[in-house]
Image (cartoon, rainbow, N blue to C red; front, top):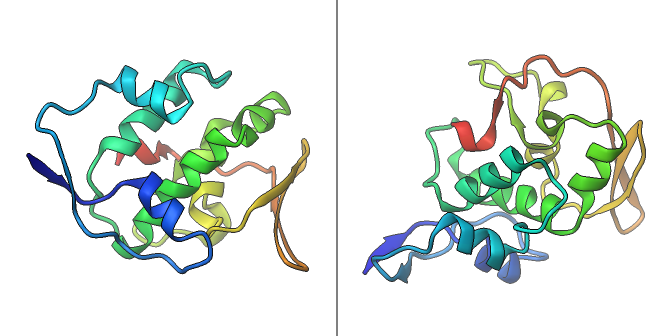
Length: 162
């Protein structure tokens, strides 16, 4: 048996209303499931997303947290990315002209501009309620947060490339 520091499904299921937290280590069999099996279990194997995004999301679910300035935020970022894909919002957004980097990108500079973050990074657990060609709307109660479709040249990497 080996330990995995993060399981996005367990984190998401146990933290729908709680703030971000890194769950306790989970024991899994030494022979980890194949990426294809993980994609099938996660419901993204038959996804209409581009194959490189599906493969990247599988890798994201399996990879250890990277070295980032705020490692406590990583479990929530991964859960957000999984939620965007699993709930069908990513496919809908891409069909409307959003780039995959808008949804799953990472601003890799030492001093990132918060206006250049991707959706998975800024969601902070807020549910998506609408996607148009111009905006993705997040809503909690009566509060709304728009995410504008605009060029974000700093998003040069995907989360799974960290």
